[in-house]
Length: 178
Image (cartoon, rainbow, N blue to C red; front, side, top):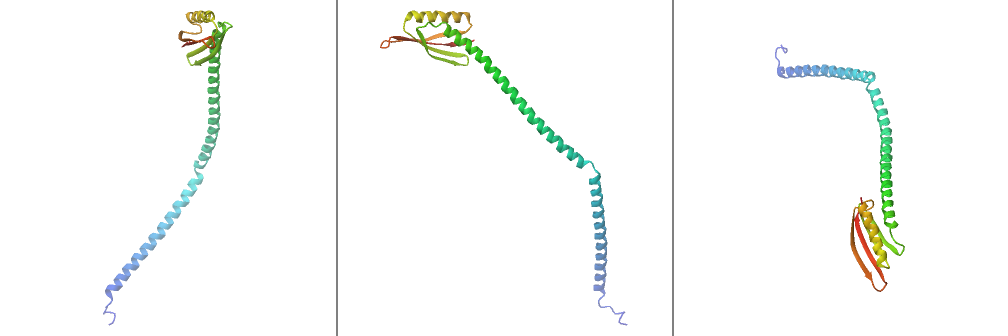
C-alpha cells in the first residue's frame, strides 16, 4: 500500500530526467573527445605526409640564394655607378685641361694669374699686368679664342683697374665655356 502512495512523484521525475540528460551529455562528450582525437591524429599524419615542410625548406634555401645574389647585384651596380662617375670626372678633367692650357698659353710673361675659377660652364679669371701693352696682347689672344669658340663661347670684361701705388693693372674676365 505504501507503493500506491507516492508523495515524491515530481522529484523522482526530475531526478530521472536529470540522470537522462547527464547520460546523454556523457555520451556526447565521449563522442566529441573521440572525434577530436581522431581528427587531430588524421591532421598529424597529413601534415607529416604533405610536401609543405619540404616546400618551406626549399623556400628558405631560395631566399638565402636570392639574398646573396641581391648583395652581389648591389655591389655590381655600385661599381658600375662609380665607374661612370669616374669616367665623367675624366671627361671634365680633359675639358678643364684644354681651358686652362688655352688661357695660360696666350698669357705674356709679365702677366700673372691671380685667380682662375671654373664653376660648371662659367669661368672667372683675374690677372695682374705691369703694362697695358701686355694686357692688350692678352685681350687679343683671349678674343681670338672666343671667336674660334674652342675654349670660350662668351667673354665679358668685368673690370680693368689700376693700383697707382703698386703700379699694376688688375683685369677681371668672366664668361661661358662650351
